[in-house]
Length: 182
Image (cartoon, rainbow, N blue to C red; front, side):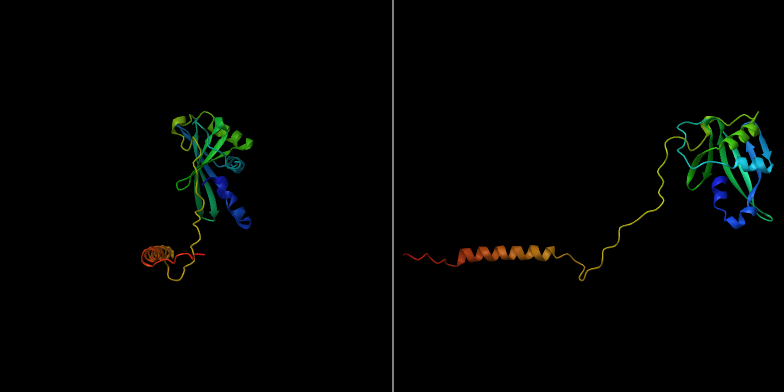
C-alpha cells in the first residue's frame, strides 16, 4: 500500500521509530535516490483517495524504504504522475489507489525528477473508470428451523382434493329432499 496510508496506520507511540529513510525515484531513463529527511517527508504526502484518471500520463516509480525498528525496514511501491498532480499507491490484492499530491510533494517530485524521462503514459496501470470494490459480504440471516421441516401446502392441497371428491360423491349418490309443498 502507499507510504501515506502505511504511515497513517502507525500507532502514535511508535511513530517516532517509523519513518522514511530512503526513496528511489525512477523514470524510463534513470533512477535517483533521496535520503534527505525533509524531502522524504514531502514525498510521502498525499490527500484522501480519489477517482483514477481517465487516461494515462507520464509517470515515475517510487520505492520508499521505511525504518520500522533498529535494524528492520519495510518498502512500499508507489507512482507519481506529476502532470496530473497524483500519487498512486499499489497493492497486488486490492488494486491501485490514487491520491492528490500535496503542493509540497508535487514540488519535491518536480525537483527530484528534473531531467529524468518519465515512463510512457500507456504503461500507467489503474487508469480508467473506478472499479467497484467489495469490502464486506453480508448474507441473510438463516431462517429458524421448524419442527417437521416441511411445508404444510401438500397436506392442504390433499385435503381440498378429498373435500371436492366427497362433495361430488354426495351430490350424485344421495337423494336430495324435495321441497315441501304448501
